[in-house]
Image (cartoon, rainbow, N blue to C red):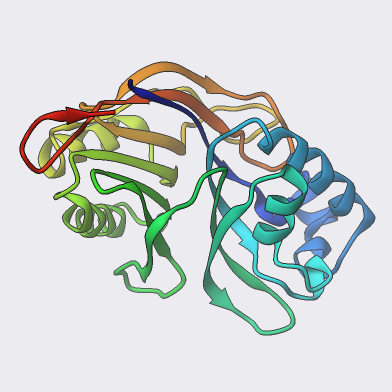
Length: 253
């Protein structure tokens, strides 16, 4: 029996529901202070996330004043009914702000590892979680500079190349054409599943948020979801993993 999962990647902008460029200024204070609007937005976001098996979230607050000292990954996992979660803090400003990534899941994750990404400036990270001994799920948020992005992707692909089945999700901060060029060089057995725009959420023009799959994984559906809980749109997919192989080389359910 093959295994089908619903997966989602979302840059949640620490729960700030930005609806136009002007609000980067008028709602900029929410990057430092708590707000009722953020609280309401997070509840709606939790309802969306409850439908998925594995989620990769970026720009998650790790528990500071602006999030009422609640780690957003843990809070969303609880309210979405997802019993397993892991948090990576990539920028820690103590009680004022704790920026990072999170993976949420309906089933246990194995051998979860966290690592900073290479680059000129600190603050970017990658999370790797085994779904089973042959399958790895990656959550990342890449830098803004193209040269650094390629360096970071090279580092990620080298870390996961021994897994037959690879799922890489996140905010790549790069357009599909350049990303496909890098894949041909760095990971030719992986594919970018869509190039639909995800940013800005109120008038999407650029595809920054992506899901990459090894060719061993079947894709049944891909959607850029029209939920404006952030300045990015979430991307989701329905995937099917192949049968696992035993040590003797025979398949097993």
